[in-house]
Image 1 (cartoon, rainbow, N blue to C red):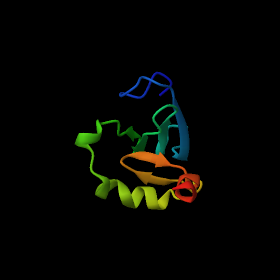
Image 2 (tube, rainbow, N blue to C red):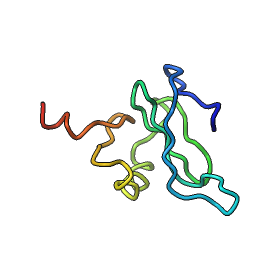
Image 3 (cartoon, helix red, strand yellow):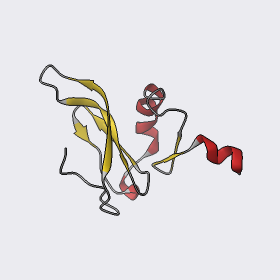
Image 4 (cartoon, rainbow, N blue to C red):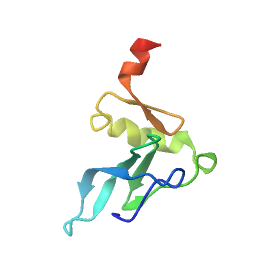
Length: 90
C-alpha cells in the first residue's frame, strides 16, 4: 500500500485504518489524496481506486455512513472529502 498514489494527480495518499486482520492487513479503511481530497475506500482488503466515472456513490454510502466517526465531521461529495468549514463559508 505504500506504493499507491492518487490515479488522477499522482499525489501521496493518507491511509486511515478501520479494521485489520490478525496478520495486520487492512480489511477496512480508506485512502485520501493529499492534493485533490478524493477518498478511496478499502473494502474486504481491496482498495477501490476506480476513476470517478466508473464509481457509484450508492454502494459506497453505507460504508461511509459506518465510517462517519473516522471522517471527523467532513462530508463526501463527488468522491471527495469536503470540509465542514466549507458549509459555513458558503
